[in-house]
Image (tube, rainbow, N blue to C red; front, side, top):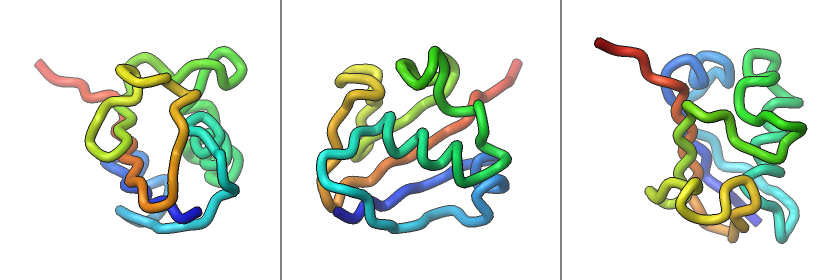
Length: 94
């Protein structure tokens, strides 16, 4: 299946591009994709998942087709070909 991934701020810097479309095995989950990204990009290592991959880091926003996966099945949210996964780092402000 093909997934479009979009990266923002420091994650864009770590990946080296704003968007990428790439293939994954059928039945991959959001957690599987995030774990793959952490393994492939040094700047993302330990930045996306916690608790051994069982949870998405608290301050992150990970959207599947514009909807926060926290309100779905979290890292166990299934993906289908054509889905768009957007990954936003923590935002500081004041």
